[in-house]
Length: 399
Image (cartoon, rainbow, N blue to C red):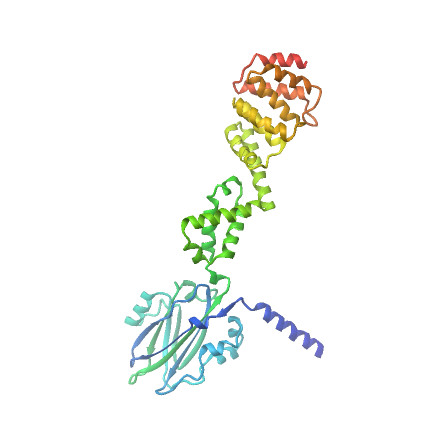
């Protein structure tokens, strides 16, 4: 039985450690204000600006009689609590945060997420817009607010307003308000969801991203590299030309990563093939030209690009691309066939005839013969308005 209890204890301790959040109590930007509230009156106190990345805060309110001093600051108490969740684990946490002394006076208080709501409270006592209301008079209180559970922090724009109402009809009240923010380490760098989306959207307008059918992985890679090196505010303060350089440098790094670059060129080939199947050869040439220009072309890329140049009557460009393709892979028969087409239509019948005859007994693929592919191509050329009396001559030679 003792062993079971021991294992349960170890398990609970482990879970507690695992549950701790990555962040810190920002004692440097904690706030402590001591002020007076006139007899049966209301005052509002604006918090200091919360640091970027604030996801939780603890506040403590203490009413003091004259000449009383605080026995211990809220910051010193929080040093013993590793993360905000420790504060809400049972009544012991709440008692631990209470002041060791407080006066006999009591007050009501309310918390507001906007200045206008707080001013209206001070003027009329209206509390319907308060994000937190303590309507029962008390002499001390301590609470934890979090972005996840409290509308106060969820709706706050960097500050909160605390409104106090005295319940003393004769004497003024002395109140101490302490606030300590909890700063999430990751969020403190300023990389909110909206800020990350801003970088990703900027990336998607780049020339590299526009080469891709789906640029999400590429742009997330670039955003992560920027996020790792800069705080968001730091990056925003850079000159436009400096930002552009980092977009280019980080983009090049992401682009060169194998998984990204392979996907990019696969997308370009896929788009080119889709455009060609719809006889949109201009777009197909545009997509595949990027692959060739980047030095990533295969023999089939050279063959296809040369063929589409032929179909669009750009014979000189076809010859140039197919000559490059022949140097890349001289035994790819699609390159040789398309080179013969380009020579024929560019007026070099003799050289074209030599190529047609040289390979006429072979297949250009595992199931398509050189002769049948030639016939298919000539039919497509004629369909696209490319006429030549040499077509019949070549077919007779092949027959």
